[in-house]
Image (cartoon, rainbow, N blue to C red; front, side, top):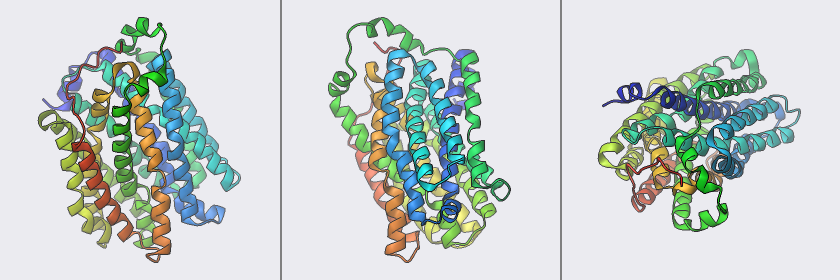
Length: 408
């Protein structure tokens, strides 16, 4: 049974919840990737190097664990739904603040604050979604939900078509629109039934630190796994538009078109491998997608011309996001019930923190060792990232189909 058939069989409440969580993650990613497309423009405007602007990406990623812990704790204590609404408003406000930053240092501060808000969305939204959805077809829903991140990238690429008209500040102003999603959540989405069921037990004496320490093994494993995954994905995404502009010489319009193409590939890959994980298992699906990125490197990083680079980037993101498509279900299945709102998202973002220097290191290596060429840096990032993702994933556990209906 395909995703569309499973989606149609959901109850109205389940359907609205999935849509809200999907859009929350999509719009969160949209706001993040606006920065990726504006790196060159920001460097010119503030009279700094590309590697210095990449620090804005670093601070966004580095502050995400703070948000994951803060909003995850609120979600486990006060509920998934109100926490998700507060989080969406927060990241929209800080995105708008970025548009009016008068100096580069102020811009870095707004991106760090945005990172706190961005870090809270994934864990809270995924917990709300999977505690509401049925266990059947969880892999398919996981694939689609995770590709909300890609939809956000695609939306940023489409917005970039208007860059010559609105400029970088205008793009960040548009990034404030996700706040309107709160209206939909307020009127159409219910609280997680699993959280409501476990509320009585949570009224007893509890200690979040103790709960996480009692599951230190799985927490550390997920941190390492998410370090590998975030190094893998951000290493193939964050500086690729810059590579197309600076090294290949494409115009903003051409870069936008290629980004649209490779994000369509990413969506298809996430859905395919998410669904495939229902049959062959989460770990095998992730490892297969990760390893298949390596043969894509020559087309993706070393070819010339629109057609070949578009094909290479389509195949690369098909595989990268194919691996990612399994992650929401896999992490929530591995997470202990009492800390499902906190542990997956917090571990995810701690792994992200460890990988947050990725774009800075890539940019400096290109500038200092390869004469500004990003091709060899991108290529080695894929090789190392793919192998690390595959080996780490296969060394862990699997709980495909685990019962997520209870958070006692």
